[in-house]
Amino acid sequence: METVFEIFAFLVFAAAVFFLAVKFFRDKDAGELLSPTAKLNKQIILKIISAALASRIVLYLLSWAFTHIIGYPRDLLDVWNEWDAPHYLWIANHGYYNADEGWIRVVFYPLYPFAIWLLKFIFVNDIVASLAASWACLCGACLFLYKLMLLDNSHKTAARAVKFLLIFPCTVFLGAPYTESVFLLFSFGCMYYARVRKFTYAGIMGGLAALTRCTGVLLAVLIFVEILYAHGLTPQYIRQDFKQKLRNSLKDFASLLIVVVCAMSYLFLNHVMLQGNTFAFMQYQRDHWSQGFGSYSQTLMTTYNQMIGVTHMRMKIMLWVKQFVVLIIGGLSLPVISKKMRPSYGAYAIAYVYVAFAPTWLLSGLRYYMGLAVLFPALALAAKRKWLNIVLTIVFAILAVAFSCFFAVHWDIL
Image (tube, rainbow, N blue to C red; front, top):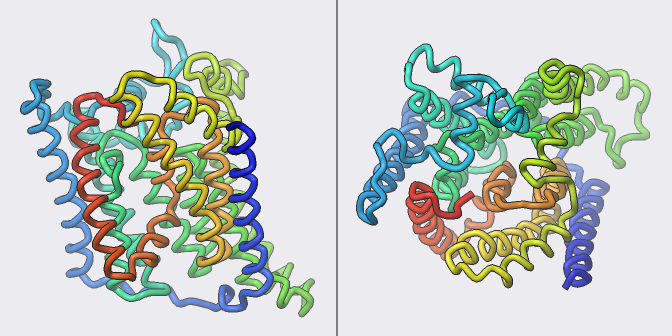
């Protein structure tokens, strides 16, 4: 099976790179100058925010009710305080160090815990502050996604993209004390500003994403490709006034430094806290969290072995079967995204999936896949077919409710 997975990985990435290259060398429309989306009126903004908040409230209350129904009662505030959530709350309350556990939490990026710490001055309770941060950022993410979709599509398609974000199977993490909603807020913001050629803003958004999760730095790939199109540095036009175009583009290319500097600041944080050990997080990832950087095919193999080897049926289905399906779908989606969507989206998707699915002991494949911001525009475009829109909506909604409830009772939804 190892050889089969290596061949599969090679084929999906090779196909994605091929379609991306073809589109990059042939696509002339991707360099079209777009005007920023007209300011959304108050009615649309209220509808989007209401939908985001209502979806969290409904899922939260259903999860709380489920814990009582099955005899695993939880306090109302504590319903989604599961798995990694207590680590973020600990960092927000006490910092990275723990006398009993040492520096094991240094692997968690600082921006989200910092946001919780700030909001505690308003909400006092750390869990309320964490939920406020996640829910507010989800609202912002939905607004940016809607504006991003309007650059190329109708209001109906934009609304469909937001819908899929709110009912994605593991959407519980967009409301729980996790980084997902913060990361997607900055990802969509980065994509939007890159599309309208406000590259400094795109760099700031990408930098904030890089302070939220390690994969945030990969948004520099998307910004880079959009800069090439903005300044005519693509194969179709590069020979025309190349030197002048390059000089004009230097300021925009400098925006990439914002992303890099923000990513490097996390290393600096390691350096300061752990007395010069800049890469301490890698040691803790390996020793405590059993994580290293492997490959997509290796992750497929590990997941497959666990899927057929684990005898505990709930863990087998909830964790390993689910993840194996996601890994396959995630790989197969790359050639489609590269062929059908903008070159910058395709390049970012390839880089993101390569890194996000490479951990040697991956347990959160579906959650990581949800972090691929271009996934939701892709779903919205694919679901222009009415039957597919209906099927995806029903399946996603059922899974979203189920996963939210299972997460609340500490089942294997990671």
